[in-house]
Structures are given as C-alpha cells and as structure tokens.
Image (cartoon, rainbow, N blue to C red; front, top):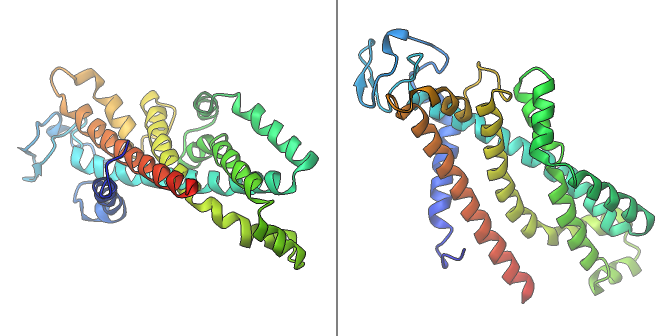
Length: 276
C-alpha cells in the first residue's frame, strides 16, 4: 500500500497516542483496573457511576471502567510487543549474521535449523507453551519469542550474503580488519532498514497474538489487564452490553492496522532505496 510522501504521518500520530497512553496513561486514569464495584456493572457509555464519576466508555459485567481497561491494556500490549520484538531481533540478527557471514558448514547447519523451526506454526507452539505452564507476563513473552526470531534471522542472513563480497568489504578485509569488526562495522549497518520495517510488522503480529492468547484464557493472568481478556469477557453480553467487547476490539484493530500500514510504508521505502 502506497500512501504518498505523507503516508506515514497518520499511522505515526496514532501510534504516538498509543505510546503516550501506555507510558503515562495509567498514572492519569483514576480507576483501578482490577477493582470490581458490582454496583456499577454494565453501565452504558457516559453513565454516572456510584462514585459520581462518568464512565466514558461504560463498564463491564464486574463494574470495571472500560476506559481504564483500555489504557492499562495499551501498556500491556506495548510492553509485550516491544519485549518480544527486541528479543527476537537480537537472537535473529546474531544467528542470521553468523550464518550469512561465515558461510560454509556453519551457514548450512544454521539454515537447516531455521528451516526446521519454521515448519512449526509459531502461534500453535505459543498456545502449547502457554497452556502447559502457569500464566504470567514472562511466559507470554517467552512463548511468543520462541519462533518469532526466525523471520529476523532469514532477512539478516539474506542481506549479509549479498553484502559480504562487496568491494568495500573486500577492501576492509585486505586492510586486516578482524572478522567480527568487519561484520559489525561494514555489513550489519546495511541491514538496519529491512529489519526496522520487519520489526514494525512483527510488533503488530505479536500484539494480535497476545490478544488471541488472552482471549482463549491461556495468556496473561487476570491480575494483568489485556484487551483480549476484556473482549472475551464481553462475549456473553454482546446483545445487551456491546461496548464491553467493542471498545477494546476497536483499540486493538486501530493499533494493529496503524502499525501494519507503517510497516508497509517502511518496507516500500527501503525496497526502493535498495533498488537504486
């Protein structure tokens, strides 16, 4: 999707709002996301609660304010998305760079390992891991990172393979630059563009996957607010209290679509830059 020169402005602004909400939003929201005032259950958007406050987006079946749930859920999604992407990026770049730069039997072994792991559906494996062990934030991050690094490794390996024989790399090698320094200084900087574009797309997929795990009830514990949990909690009230599932579902959709558009724009830009 190409949106012109200013195509990234709108998704960047939207993502910026989410980041602000994740960082400082929970400190500004006067509602405890875990508190369950049953007297305020199923209040429609704009209704006044028993404390005299206005439930801007309504309340759920336990009386919890949905606006507070969405703000705290944004922090959860951003934390998990950033952690999983950073872990996957670090592991993937390390393995892909070593495989592509060293070549030979090292590349063959690592490439076959990557192919074998890629044969396992990542989300299914995450569901199995999350279903076996006790629910926790750390477990969800680990479960989503197990196979997420493979995409970064494949991209890094492909870029390094095309660059390791370029003239500036040969010149640095002839000047006696050590292999690790040669890789870090003269090869890896050229992988930054494709990896940044991929990281944005992977972030959107991770956020969606976390919501899916929480929706199934095998992701985060109930003490941690998640959009997926809130959507799941509203399934039984779709006819009478549509707002319980609608608002967190909308928040999740807007974030994923915005990050996806940004990733597509970055991919297109870096692709055009490499073709010149």
